[in-house]
Structure formats: structure tokens, C-alpha cells
Length: 185
Length: 171
Image 1 (spheres, chains in turn orange, purple):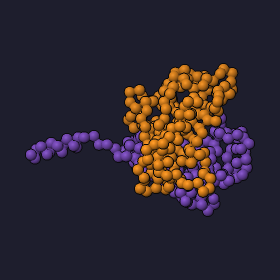
Image 2 (tube, each protein chain N blue to C red):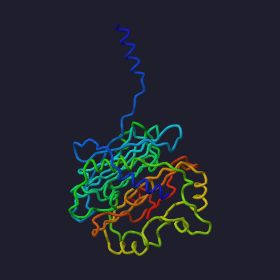
Image 3 (cartoon, rainbow over the protein chains, first blue to last red):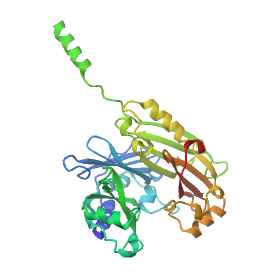
Image 4 (tube, rainbow over the protein chains, first blue to last red):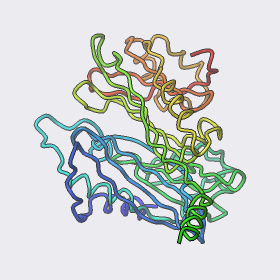
């Protein structure tokens, strides 16, 4: 799990080829193919920035299957994702290249297995109580969480804030994506 | 020659028509960050067709700074009712989606009345925000659910306050 967070942190900060400067405002995107919801057809992750300037960008993370059906989407702001809130005064606005590098890192998600998640010990009131080093949150009760973990399903984790990660699996009952866990410091 | 042209025309007429993309938006101004503010709320749909659209709600200050943003997949959250080419229905949805509820945090339910998991705040923080009578905006996050956010003037941003179940005629 630590490797996942470290990977995402590194990926978000990684240098990436600078995208072409946007002609109007800050409209940039990056895509990455992953094998997650279907082993025989890759899903497409798109990370997009949109704003009058890059300092004012709303950023959007979307996963679609090979047919173009949306599986998951999430929106935040560039600064919430990179520094966790509004920037200090006199911060220079991010360049297209900086936002492009962030988008490339954001879209470049890692697919692991739900069995990589920490176990929820019997008798622990919450997942966080029995797992470390992060604070974990799940909407599932222990029985459902452990059942999903035992399936070792492909799990897609993405950054949902400067220091937070959310992980998705395909719910075996509904065959739709569901958030199995969110974690952070 | 003419016969060949007619054959080609006939073939093209038989080709399956691709539904148009579902990229569209709706916007309005409202006062959320201050009583006299002209904040801009934009609801945007994006997808290869309207049954595959995602929708994003973004509130920006008059100067363009994002104050709140939220996204979901249209069919999962609001029902599998949008036909691939029905741009009119999605536009109608967007027009209705931006009709958000504006009130203040004193209208939020007491902490004890919240459903499990409705807020990520602890009771002390929640009660404090409620007592301060801050601007509150609630928007639909599903056919019978709303997300309510509050304006924190000290931070110059909006934050999630709570989720609630609603029916449309309660809007």
C-alpha cells in the first residue's frame, strides 16, 4: 500500500513532455490505457484541466471502458490536488508544462489487487484501527470489505487530493465500479 | 457510371449513423461567496454520446477562481434515461441542475440528525460551521440525493458539509 502512495506521489511529480500551449485559457488533457474492468479490453483514463488560466484550472479524472462507457469520474482543482488548497500569496501561476506534467502523472494510474489492501482485524471497530501507516476509510462493513479483499480483484487507485488516494474495484454483485477504500496520512 | 454512383449513395445511406457527441453546458450567476458576489455556476456534460456522458458542476468566482467542483457519471447518478443522441434531454438536465438551493448553514440539520457517513466533519467542527450562519449551497448528486457545501470566508473556499436524501419536489 505504501508503494501505491509512493508511486502516485512520484508519478504526479514526474517530468513529462510539455504539451502544446493552449490557445485559449488552460485546456489540457492526458490519457493512459489500463487493464482494469475487463482483462480483454483496456480502459482509458483521461485527466483534464480546464480554466481561464492554469492557476484557475478545474481538473477532472475520468475512466471509461473500451466502449466509451464512463466507469468513474472525479473533479477537483489544480491547487487542491497539488498543494492541498489555495496557494500562498505571490505564488507564480503554473505553466502549461507544469499542469501537463501533473495531468500525465495523474492519469498514469497503477492497477493492483484488492488483496494488497490491509486486513481489517476481527474485533477492530474500523479499518483504520487495525491498519497502518495511513488513515483508511471504507463504506463497507468488515465482512464485505474482507470479502472484496479476498477476491483479489483488479484495483485502480487514483489521487483524490494532495495527500489522499481512493481505490476502486468492480463490485461483483452490480458489475459496476465501487470505491473500496480511501486513505491518506 | 450513374448506377455505380447510386449504389454508393445507397450504401452510405445504410451506414449506421453515429450519435453526436454530448459536449454541452449551462450556466448561471449567483451570490454564494458574498452577498453581492457574481459567482458563476457551470454545469457541463462531456461524452462520446449522451448515454455515456459525465457531468461536472463548477462554481467559479467572478474572476474565474474555482470555488467548488463536483463530477459524476450521468447515467449512474441520474438514471439510465438518456438516449445516445438525446442532446435536448441532457441540456434540459443541465439547465435544471444549476438551479441549486442557496441558504445558510443554520438550515443544516443538527449533527445528531445526520445519516451515518453524511459528513466527514467531526461534531465540533460541524456544529461550529452551523452556528456561524455561513452561505450554504446544495446541489443534486443523484436522483434523490444532494451534496451541501458551505463557504468558508477565512479560507476563501467552499467545503463539503453534508449529504442528504431528498425528493425533487423538496427542492
